[in-house]
Image 1 (cartoon, rainbow, N blue to C red):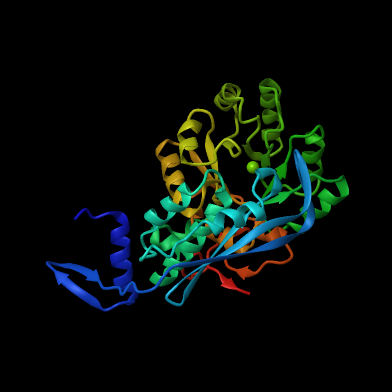
Image 2 (cartoon, rainbow, N blue to C red):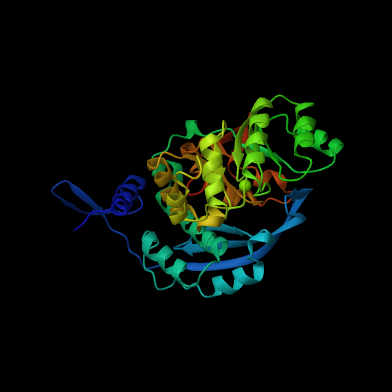
Length: 376
Ligand code: MG
C-alpha cells in the first residue's frame, strides 16, 4: 500500500493521542483502529463583525464585515470555521449560504480523509473561496482536536519562529491617524494603506509619532511604474520595509520591471489568489501574501507557502477582518512567514473566540488543539 504523508499523520497521531486501542502490530507497523461509525455534520450561521474604526482602503470604506460561522461535528467533537466576506471580493452571506447548503459531508466516513473531502467541496462550484475556506478551517479544527494537537505541531513548525504582526493604520485625517498610531504602541511594525494622492503626507504623519518599521499596502493604487519606483526609493528613506501590491494586478510586465529595480521587497496580494498564481508570481514579485479567504483554506495555504519557498519567494500571511477563529487558523502557518498581517480580530468589537494572541507585537500561538481557539 502506498504510504502518503496523510496516512502517516493519521496513524502516528491517533496512536500518540491514545484515541483508539491498537488493533494491529505487523512487523513494526502500528495501525490504529477507528470505529468510524459517526457522520460528519456541517452547520452554519451568519454573523456581522462590528469594526472599531471606519475602514478605508484605496477604493472603499466600511463599518462592518459580514461573515459566516461554520461548525463540523463528528462523534461529539466540534470543529469551528469562518468565512469572512468583505463586499469588494464578491461573496456575501447569501452566496455563502447557497454554497454551504450544497455541501453534504454525511457520505464521508472518515474526517481524516481531508484530501477527498476538500477536493469534493472545491468542485461543487466555481469561486466561493471564503465559503470553501470556512469548511476547510472547521475540518482542520476537528481533525486537530481528534488528534489533540494544534496544526503548527502537525505541520512540524516551531511556534517560537512566528513573526511580529503588522497592525494596519487606515487612511484618515491627520489627527485620527496620529491617534490610531499612538493606540498601536504595542506593535513592532505598522502597516499603512497608500494609493491615494496624499501618500507622502500619510507617511510623514505616522513618522511624526513613531519610528517603528512600516509596511506599505498600495492595494493596486499606483498606475505608473516609474513614479512607483521613485516613491519606493523615498519610502525606503522613510523606514518602510516592504511594499504590497503597488500596481494593478493586470500590469504584470510593469510589476516585474518594478520588482527588478526595487530597493524594497515587493509582495503580491490581489495578484496571488490560489496555488497556480504562486508559480505565475515567480519573477514578478519578491513574495506573496497568503490569505485563507483567497485560497480556500489551510490545506492550500500550506502548499502555497511551501511552493513559494521552493521558488525562492518570501511569504506573508494575511487575513481579512475576521474573528479569532479564522485569524488563529492562519496563524498556525505563520512560523513559515517573513511577515504576518494578522490583526483582523483586533479591529472588531464583537469577537466570539480567544486563540492566537499578539504579545509584545509578536504572533503568539496557543497550545489548544486544532486551530487553537476556545469560544468566549
Ligand atoms: Mg493587501
